Each structure stands twice: as structure tokens, then as C-alpha cells.
Length: 151
Image (cartoon, rainbow, N blue to C red):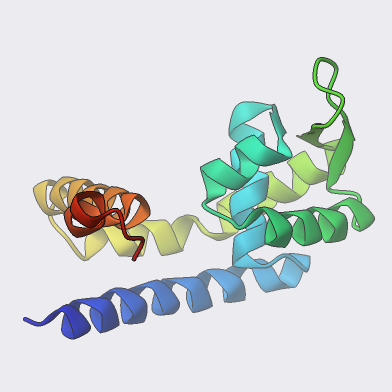
């Protein structure tokens, strides 16, 4: 397999999952990416925008625009961070919690379908491999470290 084939296979898998998730979220007026942010906030309670960008692997500027839309929908609240005047804390509103629970239930069958495609050891191996791959891509990989170049 070539690097191009690997890249295309990853892209195809991601886009297929993303389209299905977008379709599951659409009735609530939420995108797959917005759901990821809502889900991260549901798990954490409160995060700074920077923390949320890191947890969701979202560009900070893209996340800011996403949060503005979610705020207008009444699903999240942003306020100044109590200890860092430059940071903004983000939390789900009561309406946001309700929408998150509804969307979690609506996407349950999609998660079950993904798991049903692989045996449990394959799922664990795939998650480990994807984590390793993501870490290598984020760090620039061994070649970038050796040469000091970014990829």
C-alpha cells in the first residue's frame, strides 16, 4: 500500500462517518462537528475555548465561529474565565444538555453499526493505530524531528 492509498482510505472512512453523523444531527439543526463540541462540553462540564479546541481537534478560529452559532441557538454559554481574563469559559446551557441527550440517542445506532463492523480486538487495535497515527501527524513525524522541518 502506498501513502496515497492510506491517505485516501482514511479520508473515505472519515467522510462516510461524517456524512452519516451530519444526517443524524440535521433534524436538531446541529452539524457533526458541532455535536463533537457539545459532547465534549457534556463530558467536561466547563472548558476554555482553547481546551475545547484541543479536545475536539478543531482549529481555534473555526471553533470560535461554531461556538457563536451554538450560542445564538441557545445551546452554549460563553463567559470570561474566572482566573484568566483573556480566556473564555464555555458550558452547555440547559437547552444544550437536552439537545445533546437527544442527539446522543439519535446517533446510538450509528455507533453500534460502526462497532458491529469489527470484532472487539479489531476495534481496540484500530483505535490504538489511529491514535498513534494522529500523534505522529501532529508532531510532524520522525522525518520532521530529524530535519527540523514541518510537514
